[in-house]
Length: 178
Image 1 (tube, rainbow, N blue to C red):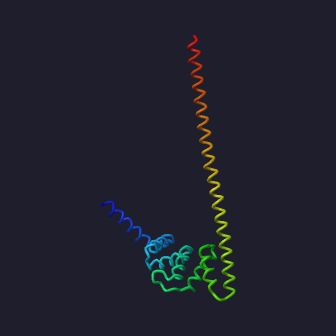
Image 2 (cartoon, rainbow, N blue to C red):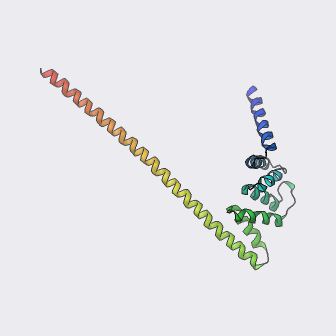
């Protein structure tokens, strides 16, 4: 039971520390905690983190406004503004959501911007995927090299042990002939 009380105390301490913090990541993660627990108050922490430049927070704030999450009044105009701000900084999910809102509009210019954002998101995701793939290949090569090297070391060790055994047998047989 002590363990459970200790965990609860540590959790409450962490939550209060993040709630009162001015650190962008603390504000964002506290907002995320509230969001995961379906708390309307989460938008306030996303807004604070977004003001400090956290694009993921700006995205979630916009998403809540677009969807009217947790009883928040729907405001697609404000959501679009936030999505576009994050999209300008390369936030791919914001590009996709902004393009969806723009595509719903009646203006051809909005539809053109929607297509541009989707194209840009695709390019960025491709670059991200390409970068991740290159990283995975590099990790594989490093790990494979270690496996080959370890295997080679084991074979060398086995070979040396085998040579020692043969040398020992030779010495013993030479001693036996005397």
